[in-house]
Image (cartoon, rainbow, N blue to C red; front, side, top):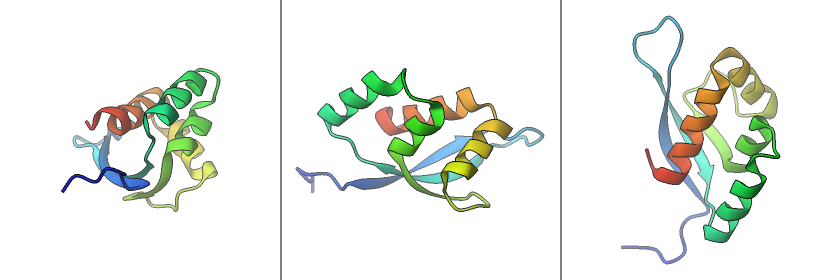
Length: 98
């Protein structure tokens, strides 16, 4: 049954390419739900925020990563992998479902 008021959090699988591996790693990301008004406000401030701050606004937690979700670990992930790609993949998954 369709819920008129969506859950405040939802899980989605995101694939992250890993250098030296032929297959991407699959992470389960717990996203914070945004209604239309919140999403529009988020998109307006997106260009003014750092990638880390923007992702911290939309991610609650993750599974499939060898460290607990935190600002420091997220910064490390974006430093060690192509941050632009990871950032775009996460935003696309949040807003477009795939």
